[in-house]
Length: 131
Image 1 (cartoon, rainbow, N blue to C red):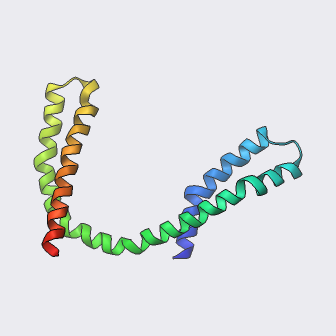
Image 2: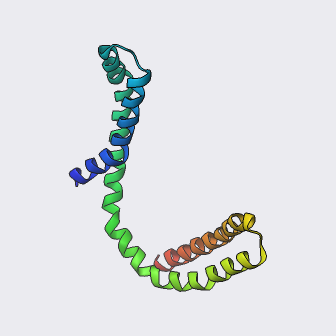
């Protein structure tokens, strides 16, 4: 699992940050290569190492939860999709039919609040039923 976690860190965080940092350093940093290296190692690398360890720990925790999360998801996805098909087509149709384009996002975000409340309530009922 460590190889996967380090690969994710390199691709998501370290690669892009390093790319833009070194580009910035080469354009705006000290003219001396030695001073650039010192600036990088003393100012930038320590916080990046802290972020790396946080990222690695968080990612490992997430990866450990994937299998149980998948099982939980598969147990509720069917009924959720059916409920979604009852709610969202009507919400989207009414939005497109009765509102101006500039209001679509706001209207659908308001619908999304109602949808989130419904899912949260349903999730709470499921959890209470198991306890």
